[in-house]
Image (tube, rainbow, N blue to C red; front, side):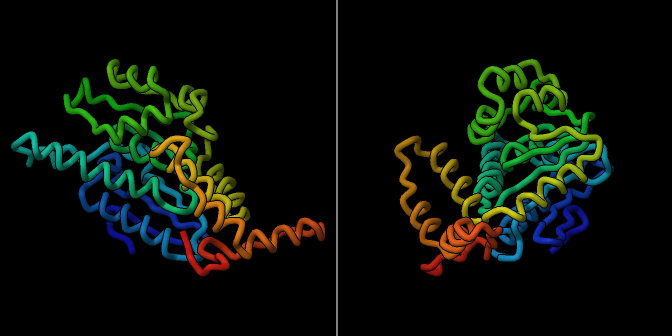
Length: 266
């Protein structure tokens, strides 16, 4: 499942999604947003996949927002409402992926690109990466509350409003200090590979439970019901086998997400 604008490949339990418009700094087209959603569906349906990695081609950008030429088709305010709803749906889908997601960032990560990076679980970047939402000095548009929520959850209110009002770009060092990045490395691909290797070796159900529990916490607060999550994890063959392995002082092995004694999956 690949297009010329989005390349999707799978190897060693890792699904890699490459945004492939380097001459346009990987600015997102409608087709690219659709391909990203399809990649999310594959990540959830293929039991051999343990982690999904997003990256940009060309070394100049991860994703430099949405392709501005598409906005020339807008004629009413409702066009903007429909656009923001569509992008929000893609970001929501990305957040809901049941396996860990990682963004490997080189160059510009701005606008819609920053939204995508905010929607994944972990982020690695090169020192030359830049982050921001400079719409106040470029298009004069706005972002949805879904995108604002993602920004605030990742950067806090103060940094978010500063990014939006000053329209300045944040350096990789600043993003790392803010906790947005887990690593800054000259070779982001190698650093990403190191992280994915660790993730692949971990318990899929445990990682899914952490992701889903946090998603519900953000949505419903501390009263969120996670009974089904706890039941699925503690009732799984993976948990039972890992307890036996721990007692026997041997390394556990994992069958993967979707392997519950009930036969249900995330």
